[in-house]
Length: 342
Picture 1 (cartoon, helix red, strand yellow):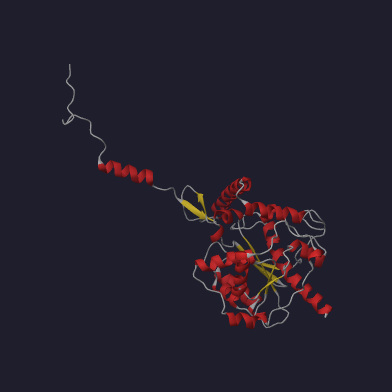
Picture 2: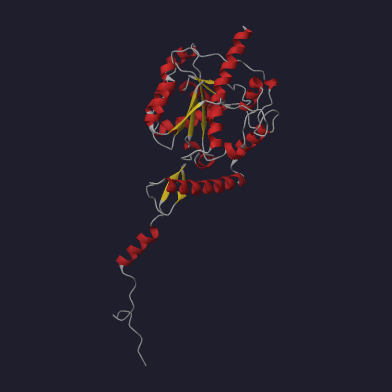
């Protein structure tokens, strides 16, 4: 009969060595590599440099699938009020008379309208120089702007959300500036700082907040002193005051009070050259119907699509250009109506 092994003896099975424990901790504690996509972690097998169009297409397809799953999850969640609000507003706009993609007559861009899609700083600077700076002295130059962003990234990081696409339109051309979470192009920053160039937008407060977040994250200041703002107001292009009873209010339009009103006033101070064409918060669809008697495509499938795509879909391009070009047309028509009334 074998005697029991002594605890202090050398025959007692020893535990794992310290080096073995450290190796296990390093192995199990190692985080999975991730590729940052729209401020949300998108898991990938290996974070490698994409070198071929086929690799890009495969990654875009995987990101699209992931985005749709996240969007569906957020849409079902009771806490995703922003996503539900955007969807309900788009559905509301599509159901209005003379409004929506299902009608024959809706607002479109001209047949030979020039569209430039760019993300590199040189390409952005070239377009701004050619279509904006060289014509800034002309009194009739009107610039329409709009912003697009991913609803998933907005839900995940509401206070740090960036724009994913910036549209800048003139009568003859439109730039679709893909942000891709890069540093703002210097030419674009100077364009926003140039307050002699009036930029027309529809309900711009939400867009400008995201623009401010983007600039702030790269320590870029854009606000002007108060005296500069007061001098700028004398040059502002007047717009027509539209009566409330002419339109059907949007379901998510609420009066601005408290911090919201203070926030809007601060945005006006930082961006005095932005003219809001929608002072009564009726929406672009109602303005388009009022001044052009045309519908506007506000399909939720496009509005809530993934705007951070490296290659935008054709319907995304058409939608984005229409939104910015519409602001140019609305500004011209409002100006004509004001002059006729005088």
